[in-house]
Image (cartoon, rainbow, N blue to C red; front, side, top):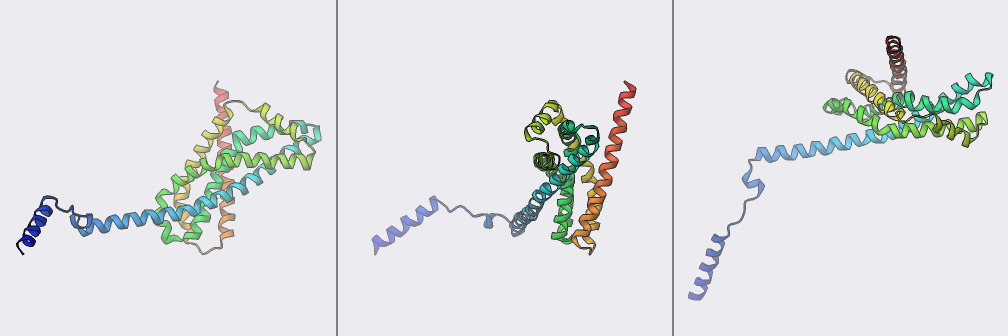
Length: 249
């Protein structure tokens, strides 16, 4: 019995030398633990919500690039074909897509993806995320920019080859021979300006469209018309600014 008591005393002394470290729930108040759990859960839910936006952005990037590339090719070919100038179509298309079209279509694809995403999540879930809409518009436009450029060139190449019998080799070398090293930088800068302006405009417009009980296709049609008006005004203002700059010089 004495040996047993001695071993027990030694065991107790050992435990006293190496005390157990307290866990987080023992050191932190319950309110801090609850706030940490709530914050982590809210961040996870927010990421899941925005994951739907990125999927819709990929969809609208394909749609917008395909339509815009085909449209700019048909307009250029229709205007040049009466004068026998189909060989200049690749040059016009290359400059239009790189300098102007990508800077308008990439922010438009991001804006349409935001409208589509907001319709699916509803106004209750949109309100906490509304302050991030401008940032998502800009980041989405930059993310969609390479896809818009590549998709527009592929769509334009297909239309030029099968609708106007322009050889693929002629089209590709015509586009590459026209572009200057600064053209991509001009396109990226124009994309940033357009995306920032659209992001600011979406802050009041997005909740109005989300609260309305209109079907999705009506919201997207209104969004498309507003984007066409916005891009037209922005292009006009840009042309006036360039004309005034040349006149001053």
